[in-house]
Image (tube, rainbow, N blue to C red; front, side, top):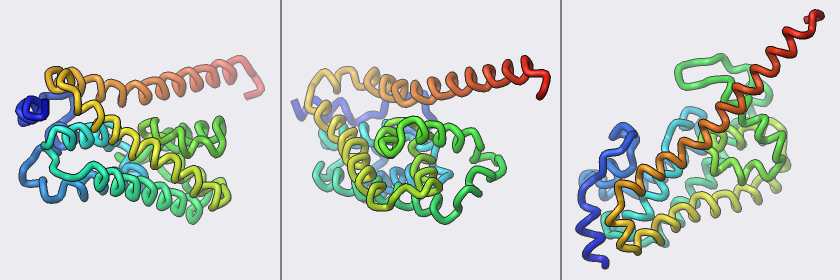
Length: 234
């Protein structure tokens, strides 16, 4: 089984992401092999801790890293990879919280730019308002929202110890959990035989939450516009 998976994992599969964002491409680059763990951790940290990292492919990256570790393409013990991912995910949210705590409400007034849109912060704020402290955990599984939710928690002055607790749980469930899921599925021959379909599904699952959030935001905006149009006082 292992020899079959190794043979099937040597070639990247064309995906819908550009090569520089497609984990199935750059994680296989022999030139990056000595730096794979650092690269994965840097991307995880940037997506969760830096406001400009919202576009990075966190879910597909972790799953692919776990799968390629199982097939031997990435020659790193899964325990080492999982521990490093956990540290990066935890540290990223801590930095996000610190940014929000220091910047305060000014985060909500930051002007739009090529890499920043106010709607991203508003979406994360609505997510936080809806789920409270649990949002720190749940947001890990929602692209874009996971980047801004720890910042919102900092702005809202969530008790630091409470945030750390939620952060630990979220880093374990998302960072380690998704990586181990990829590693576990990498043990099965049918994954190697259908690896192109697997990667398409991964990307699709990463995009679906974004599409759902965009549709919700559009409906909310339309409802607000109708209310303003129906109220002559405005």
